[in-house]
Length: 306
Ligand SMILES: [Zn+2]
Image 1 (tube, rainbow, N blue to C red):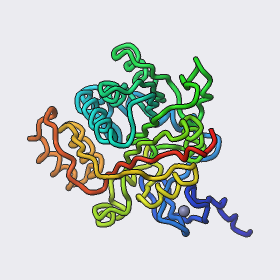
Image 2 (cartoon, rainbow, N blue to C red):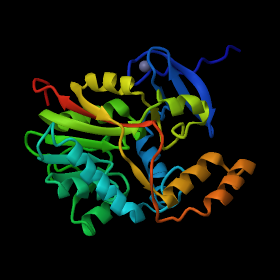
Image 3 (cartoon, rainbow, N blue to C red):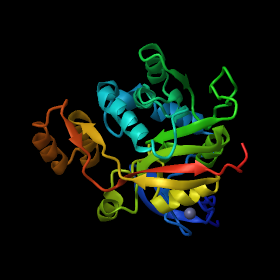
């Protein structure tokens, strides 16, 4: 009997054929033959299931690939939102912002501190409720891929679109990348901006670590971008780069320890590292040291349609 050839899976960035590069914890990491993009495919039609499974409350409190205690990092995240608002102040003046993957609302709150008026969308209902009830922010429960964008429903879309759409630590998680970005594009006002923070698979540290790089981390992380692949993808949605850089990110001791333990596993090295890390206090804030994280501000062509 002839072997059934696996269904061809095209690259979501450039459409070229892809092949499995290696596997991580039972999931394929695919390599594109035409560009630098790497990704894990979520089976068509199972996106809602995927989101429910991956972004339950455990993602925000269970450690592992997620967060040991997301709400405890509120101060750091709010400062990150303020920092980004100051960073882009030369390129755009505060207006209406939509924060995709807003979680408990802290980054959005930081943007609002600096003059932006905000709304958000977040798949985890507990986090979105925190943003609404504790911070008084308009954060709707849902995913960008499935949002209808109807006024008063899952997205408070303003007439004319948002002046800024922020995707901080979000694009690597989209289960339907092209659908999500098409919706983000439709929600962005002509001349409006996207601010994206994500990981760089072409960075020196990612290349040195190879398949052991922490962002080969399915099923929560599904895409490994380089700056070049992200810029090329965004261009297909009428978005051109304006500025980019490496964020001065700080993370809590608790989060750093939890990520390292997840990465190193329960083997001898993991146990050794766990013992060594026990001296790092949970509440200390540490600068993120590596070169594999970047941010980029993109502008929508004012002639691009909505
Ligand atoms: Zn490609």
